[in-house]
Length: 403
Image 1 (cartoon, one colour):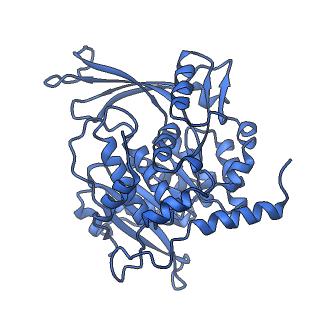
Image 2: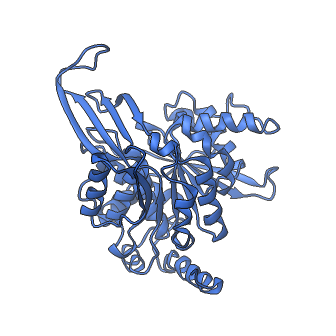
């Protein structure tokens, strides 16, 4: 039986109040208005906070990389190393987020795997992390999703084949997600990955929106990102890469011809100085998402870092908002593997957000976490410590990109 509405409302207010930083939290930069996350408040609030909810894929990854001195060749094999690792966007985010949060508010992962050796391995690994498997559905008639990927010696992805039939044919259904309605209503934030079917994303967004719970969407790929068009107005955050952002904006323009993308020539300004070949198009695309209802776009631009685009209220704007763009540079590192770095960025940002960080400060925390993941052969950082990544994030330069 669901608790009375007034109880749910009281608990929701209690959770929201815990996200507010204390009045004496120091400013990151005098006069900037952006408050730094207080480590003391992070630890204290985490003991009382409701768990975040993460909905999406659990996948077993097979990853190959050539030995130093060898290169990937079409139609030929090369000596190297092949590893198997638990993966999937939602799973990766939830694992890293769990490492950053206190035991009492570790995230609930809602996902599905087959009843097969790969599914057994994924659930066993999840249990080994002392994380709850109650949100993981075991499917008798569908196989656990698998990915086979090869990487260049530089760590960049060369090829990838994804067998995710389970996710596309009803592994995570609306009925399965509805079974965790109260968890979603009480969560400080909900993360969706675009491996989900459109009706599942719609249901999760409707539930979260009804309780004022912010939703973060991870687009996963350009092909899957467009599934999010019907729910853009409900998204607080979206974290595409360049290709995914342009794909969403193009699909948005097609579905809403009365609102074409803004002219891009000569409007890139500081974006072009970052070395982005399509700076003007990316800026126009980010602003298109903001006008469609997304509150904040966290654009990952590889070796150029991250660009955060936010919508701010403006009475004198014809659309009622004024976009604000901020750049955070990457942390120099020797890249071993790019797999999972973007997911770690999202996890770090979510950890910051639920404890009161601004979107820019949260993205800086995510950047510090991603820096650690780039240095490991896997999809999540090893021995990540919240104190360390918050301290590292505070040293990163946050550069406004508005002309």
